[in-house]
Amino acid sequence: MSSSTESTRRGVLGALAALSLLTILAGCNILGPGLYLVSDGREPAMYKLDPKRSAVVFIDDRSSVLPTRALRDRIAKAAEKQILSEKLLDVDLISSDSLQQVVLAERFSKPRSIAEIGRAVQADQVIYATVDSFTLSPDGAQFSPTATLRVKVIDAKNDARLFPPDTAPGAGGGKDPAYPLTIPEKVLATGLPRSTAEVTKAQQELADNLGRKLGELFFKHSPRDPNSPVGR
Image (cartoon, rainbow, N blue to C red; front, side, top):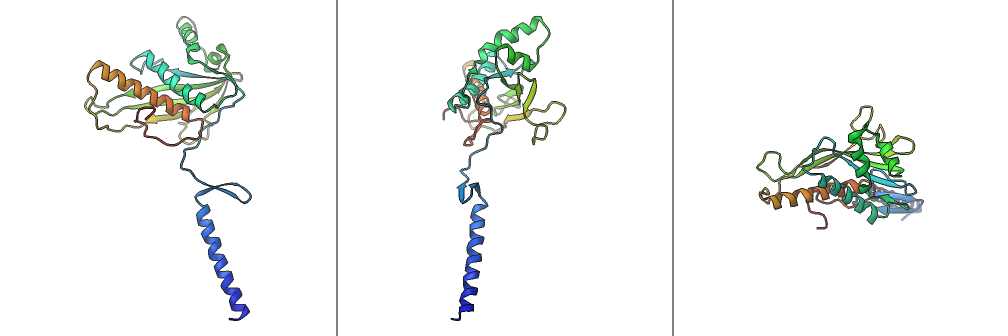
């Protein structure tokens, strides 16, 4: 074989090898020069909290969408559990319990801004979520737990929205957009809860799952069935 033919053959093989490599890297994340990491299938964080600044989770249900006040607290606690387990903060995660007296005082005074509420409990960041929907069944016949929050992260010190940015997909637009977080409607095989105990348990599981999803917004995580009970 002539040297020119051999050179051509090597060039073709080299081009094919390069094309194969590019195809592989199309599904990879480039870490740096010469370093590549194959995607692990996990969902990215929607926003990263500042680890050097204290934070509090504020679940706002002023419209009384939730059946009980205890469910509001349960959502907050489930979110706190995720943030603490992932060690997202180097400083305090202020318990949502500390907000109770602050919110209660609003009944007898002018409503405070989210930033003012955060400052009242010495929180630099407020993870604020308004409850838009929370139901076990859309029609009273099928067991299909679903719930929706509208989420923001507020800089309490500077009274500014940190998340979502105005340009974030799905932020809802308007002057003060929020990130919609939903446990989608999915009909479960088990029948609709009937007894008081069964309804309470189902509501608690939905609250736990909603809080878990809220906490997961702030770190990379593996996707899970949103209707599966926490811990399973």
